[in-house]
Image 1: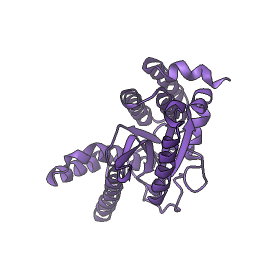
Image 2 (image 1 turned 60 degrees about the vertical axis):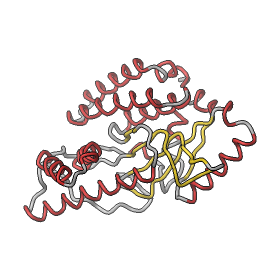
Image 3 (image 1 turned 90 degrees about the vertical axis):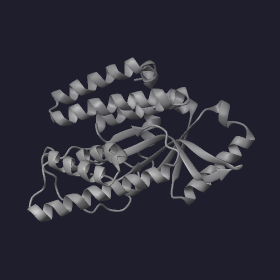
Image 4 (image 1 turned 45 degrees about the vertical axis):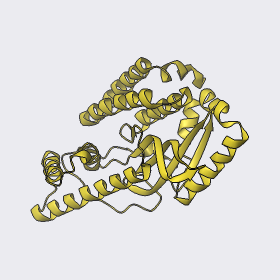
Length: 280
């Protein structure tokens, strides 16, 4: 099928929500757990809102919505898209700390009681600790991570318009189109740029782009660049390419988010994952 048939819906919020409806109905028929269907409904509609609010070009909208649908079909809770962040590295580090905190608290509670706490009890404890420490601002991410932790789901966070204040070119901090990381796998660091010809064809922009890529690499980030023509002509292939570009980081990332056999009432013990892999 010509992928360009999808373009009208990929560029239209109403069309995207209709596609989400269709896929959720199909997932329900296929026996997906109710909690996953409900969370997917909330998360994917929120991501669509974020994309249309913050995307800075049509090709970004097409790319991100195609990626959203790719995960919806393969791993419904494997991707979360967040709006602009001024300091991407600082935000990612905060998410790493939240994830580690959740695991430590869960481990301590399990040792004390001899059994994994119910999710509702665990969320109440997290809320009380956050309010006591004056860290209410982390609760949104903490709740979401806790749900995914209890369901034993691997996932990736994508931040739109990600700022890197430590990288300056021509005395100006850089901002990337998007950057991806995973709280469960600190080795996953990827920047994606959607390069429209009109804004990336002159020599000076070409120079700055290469300097950006080298400086990002020094921070441990691989950069993937997709041209506007690639995205328009092959939206699914381009977005899929952002999740399968190498074996150690993103190959088969579509499998991230595979459901655990059990529900989310009890959580399995955390297992050590091999470096460079976020496969379930």
